[in-house]
Amino acid sequence: MSEYLTKYFNAPTFSEATTVYDDALLSTVSVDGYYSDGVVTRYQLSGVLGLNATCPTCVTYPCTSGVTIETIVFGRYDLKTTFGSTIGAIKLTVSNVDVHPIGIQLMKDNVEYDVKFSSTDTAFGALGQVNAPITNELSLFSSGVTPPCSSYNFSSLSLPTYIYNGTTWSTDDILSTVSLTNKRNTTAEDSINTLILYIPKISATDFTLRTIAVAPCGGKLTAPLVEIGCPIALPAFNVSGPQPNQSAACLTSIASTLYVGYVSGSTVSGDVRISLNDFIFDDANGNVKATDAWYGINRVNAEGGGAAGEKSRIQVQDGIVINLQSCV
Image (cartoon, rainbow, N blue to C red; front, side):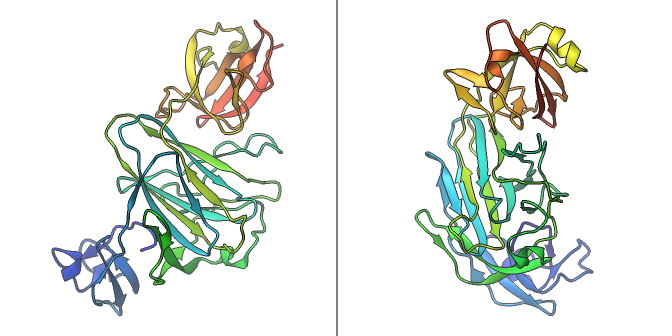
């Protein structure tokens, strides 16, 4: 299948079943198409499942210095990544979205994970959280109102699935239907190039991150790249407690600590430099987003830096910096 869906069948195992249903009462037969339990794949036609075909081997790729999905070819890409015993925040980056749209679906140990990005684009101010209407399904993103290929406007596409075998991407060329309905709404002024989110790993117990990337256009060397980093501890910076407005943020003493997941900001000469669209967390693993509020920060930790004793303020919404101002 193109994505994980809840389905029902009339036998103890999928290999023994004769029909796939949409409901637990087995009253509504599922639409024709390919179905798989991850072990075998079967085609259902007129409510009857066909022969079992063994699924291609899906290698779980261990994170070393990061993993990259290059969506140059029109298709659906399926990658499983493990992270060992290291704890920290896993940075997932999708670049070149301004050139070609892309669909992203995430699962942690086969449980759907919300796809909620921030963007590096600040041309029209902070975009805040970037997401499709349904965050725990395949989510599609494009830049501006006119996508660069007509196929992005379709409600679905038949695509080959590419699976990573540890060395190369391979496909059996069997097409599966991928829904393209869960698209993020865009405007003419809405320009996104690089999308970033952070996935927490809060214990030494490993998990498998399954990343599905759908390239409805493909065909160019500048097609979207999906990069999955390894867990790292996020950098800390000092803040005031959460405040209801700008004035309070500047007047309150800086005596607390938060952590930044960089999107547009960076570390400069050892100092955290926060920028619009950066993620702000309560912990170094990126597990809990900071409370929606204003915060006072040292000016040296704001974009551009500043002198000792100077302060700035940031507004955080949905765990993302949407305002950054100097305290005057």
